[in-house]
Structure formats: structure tokens, C-alpha cells
Image (cartoon, rainbow, N blue to C red; front, top):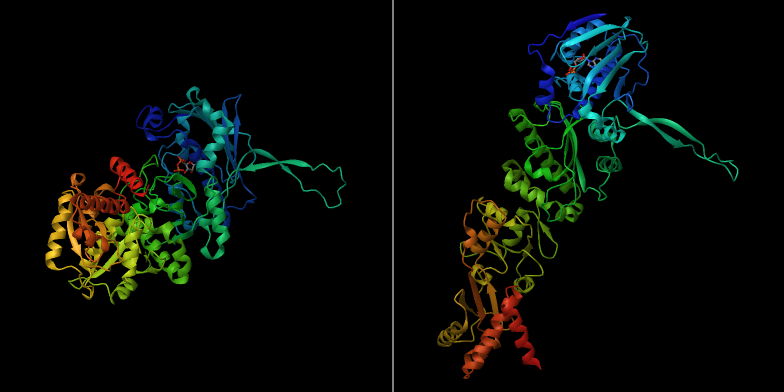
Length: 627
Ligand code: ADP
């Protein structure tokens, strides 16, 4: 038996590890299972290049919990270690055997998927254990070794009688970590961190019911057997080639990832790049609607099939954090606790790649099946519009697939829309005027009025649409957006002056004075000669003011103090309406006031502006009128 002192510069490194190195003690299991996986993959590689002349078999990694003995065993059938290797690999802290391995077999090992560079992986065992044993037998023809260490730098190393190849790690769980002896705790951790690791992981057994034979008698009782309980899927969909996978496979994998999600994803994007960095993954577009709420099931980050975190901030551009799925990249630099990102150029490259890939996929979905893309538009638009606002690279590409639907469900790209509007919707400066509604119900009468005049009306109802419109207008697009209930559209759109006013200029002046006598200061009265069938009173809001107010409510744009902006409205009165004539011609001042106020209330009602006391009074007055 050898005893010795681990060569560390700090006398007591273990308490330090326990305290500072890892933010989460629970990751010890991930580290040890990763080591077992590495050891197995290394063996596989050595066999494949003829260096190890042993049977690979069907290796599994087994976890056993001995509650009474307060022990956890992690057993692998990998390449094992000789006593010398234990000295070398285990005793020299921060000495990464994986690193040396990679160095030695640099080229041939590239594709073997070794989980290296995980730093002090093995020593994380001391976060939960007061004593750790390693019993290991190398694939080489050498005796097994037994290493024991109680957390101080002293260790013992002696021969062992283990005959089967591989390594068994025994953790003697410390008093403050007894929770890890619960089966439910361990299976929870395994399914969080190890669900997609490349080597099968066994935890306990389960009973399986054998199928009933065809010639079974009536009273046949199905036989049950005990089988290994394998908790992981070693070949998750993202590790395969897109050509190997059907739509159904992608959907099944989504269910595997999110067992509690019952809604199917709309479509997926398979990421697959190996130069200048390595990254695979599958992103899913869930049904989002207009909700920008924080997602519960977030994108998961893996490194070589080992779960790292579901905080992908920085790696995935912000607008895509609304998506779901998996990203696997060994090239994402992580700090030692593997929970935080080190912001650097490589990460920015990855984020740019993802943005580009998502844009390309959207473009091809649009080109391949436009009808389907249109049908999904409402559920994806929020992500795309947010992307246009936040990522210039995405904005540049968005023209090819971002849609602008009309209130009647015709979908235009921006270019198509421009073509369409050219014919009859330009303003006095020659800019194309895009009329839009934010809500089909609330703005119904305005939409109808605009359509009657032959105008195209879009339905743009995302919460962030004001920001996007602002951006598009500022982008030399030659477009100006006006909501249907904004400053009256006839003022903006150049039109044939063929609606002649029934009223003389003198009559108009009189009408205006009469109206202003009864109408609150916040309204500026505007007379217009419209079709006699058009609404007599219409309230509109200046486009600019309304939009600024909305933008300040949805955050951003640096619009400070916009909440205090005064309410401003236009009251557009149709001088060709019968009501305008009645108001003008009545001699009875009380009746005139009555007409104006009732009409104003009706106009407010249709703009959803009549509320509280005013609404109650209006309803009461209206009942009086019809009784
Ligand atoms: P890393 O895995 O990052 O190299 P560790 O501290 O986890 O760092 O492990 C150190 C070294 O010990 C490994 O590189 C490997 O050579 C060896 N080792 C650890 N666990 C095992 C195991 N289960 N089987 C064989 N070798 C192992």
C-alpha cells in the first residue's frame, strides 16, 4: 500500500473547492457520470484504432444508491486506470487527463466526442462526500488499484481484486448532503443533466410486462420481468443528420425534451456547423401569439450531450430566447462552474450564426410553402418583429419573409405592398401611405370607411408594432404608416377632389362656431366634405402622438416622461351629413347643444373613449330618448 500527499499548493484545497468552485453542489453527479462516459468513449476510440485489444461489449454506466451505508456508487466499464495512472491523473489536481489524451490522439480523436476541459471534475465529489474511493481496473493487463481519500491532501493507494474492466467511484456521503441518498433526488439529477448523454446510464431496475402469446388461454396472466432502468437516450435527434429525420422524429424529440408541453411546435430549425466552431442543435418555434411572456421551457445548452444550463443569454440572440430546443457546442467557453458564460468573440460569432441560420430557414419555409407560412404568421410574428428591431443582421434579411397582412387576411411582403399601394395611396409628398388597424373590433368603423374608399388596410396588432413602424419609416423605405383612426386619412392621401361640399364657406364658419361652443378643449374641430352616408362625427388621434405614447408604454426608444403627454384628439365633422345640416339649421340652442353632445358621445363610443360617469349619463340619456 502506498500513502502519499497530493501535490497541491494550498494545504487544504478541498474546503475551497466545496465553497467556491461550484455554485451548485448537485453537479458532482454530472461530473462523475461525464468521467465515466469519457472513459467509455476513450476505450471505444482505442479499440477502433487498434490500440486496445479488448471486447467493447455493451457498456453502461451504473449508479447505485446505498442508503443504509450512506454511499453512492458510480460504475463504468470504460478504459479504467492503472495504479500509475491514478497517481498521475487523480493525484495531480487540475491535471486534465482528457487534455493529454486529446493531445496524444489529436487528429483521430476529434470525432470521438470526448468531454474534456471540464477542469476539476473529479474533485467535485468532495462537495458531497467526506470520503471517496476509486476502485479501478485498466484495460491493460495490470492489477486493479484502490485509491482512498478523506478530503485532506493525504491519500492511500493499494492493489485491489477487481477483475472486470472499468472504474467504480464510491462516495461516502457527508452528513450535510444526505439528501443525495434519496432515489428521487438522484433520478431527478440524472434526468436533468444526463438525459441525452452518449452512453446508456442505468439507475435501478423496472418491471416490464411481456406480451401475451397468440395462443394464450383465457386465464393467461402476463409475465413480468425485471429489466435495467436506462434513464437516457444516448442518440438524441440533434446528433443526427437532418436527412435522417422525419417531421415526426422532430416532433417526438420535442415531446422528449418537454414532456409537459402538449402543444406541438410550428416548425424546427436544425443547426449543424463544424467550422469555424462546432455547434449542433434543434430550435423549435412554439405557438406564441401576441404573448411576450417569459418562457417556462427554455432553450437548453449542452456540451457533448451533457446538460450545462438553460440560461442561453448571449449565445442565442435575445429575440430567439422565445424559442425552445437544444444547442450543443463544446466551443462555448464556460467558467469553472459551467453556469456562466464568458463573453467573448467566439460567443458573438455563434450568436450571429444562429441569427443567420434562423433567417435562412424562415426564408426557405416561406418560399417552399407560402400558404403554410401565412397560416403560421400570427404565431411567429412577435419573434420576427422583435428580431427586426433588435438585430440589424436579421432586419436586413427579413424583407424576404416578413409579412404584412391586411384586415382581410391577404399577406404582403413589404415589396409587394409597395407595388400594391403605388396605384392609389400616396400622400402629398409622394410617399406611399400604409393604412393600418391595430384592432379589428375597436377600429371597425374606421376600417370600413377606409375600405369603402378603396384603400388597403393592414392589420398590425403586435404590442411592439409602433417601434417597428418607426424603424421602417426611418429606413428610407418611402413609406409612411397611418393608423385608420389617426388624423383623418383623407387629409393624408392625395385624392380627386370630387366630393363637393354642400355647405358654403359662410355656413361652414357658423357650423364650426356652434360646434366649438359645446365641445371640450382637447378636441380640435375639423370640417370635411365627405360622402353623405359616411359617419357625421369621427374622432381621430394624431398618428405621431399616439405612436409615441404607445412606444413609451412598451418600453424603449428612450422616450422619457412621455406618460405625461396631453390627450389630443381631432373631431372630424362630415359637412355633407344630414346631422351637420340639422346642427347648422336648428334655431333652438338647447336642441343644438343636445345634438352636438349626443353625436360627440357616439363618436367617442365608437373609439372606445366613452367611459365611467360619461358613459352612464349617455346610456341614461339614450333611454330617455326612445321611451
Ligand atoms: P477531466 O475529466 O476534466 O480530465 P477530472 O478531474 O474529472 O478532469 O479527471 C481527471 C482525470 O482522471 C481524467 O482526465 C481521467 O484521465 C481520469 N479519470 C477520471 N475518472 C475516470 C474514470 N471513471 N475512468 C477512467 N479515468 C478517469
